[in-house]
Length: 140
Image (cartoon, rainbow, N blue to C red):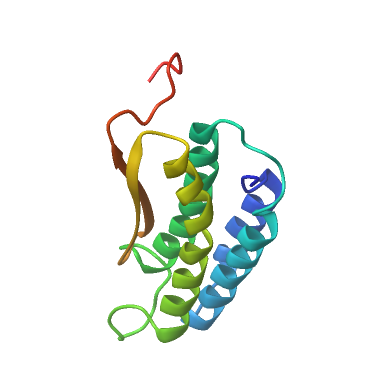
């Protein structure tokens, strides 16, 4: 799995400047999910901690888009509370795409489980639990 490249990150940042509705945001999240699904089999992260970093980079990109729209000071301009159906659906699909690489991290470390948390308004968080999550000599 490859992380989001600088060009894609810049594209998302630019698109978020123009997002004016939940429908627009759902489109951005859908594009992120498609990119995640497209890079699942690309590259190879022999180090599970490196793979975890890649997953976290994708979660951060999703969170950026969510927070940019919904967080205080974001671009949301509506009287509706919470997330719209399209946003909830797309962020869930994108988070679902992160399950396989996270399970690989768990299988290759001393982690006992992973979690993917989707929270309003900030987006997606990744968590691992276990005894020793960082590889020996990694400096962590």
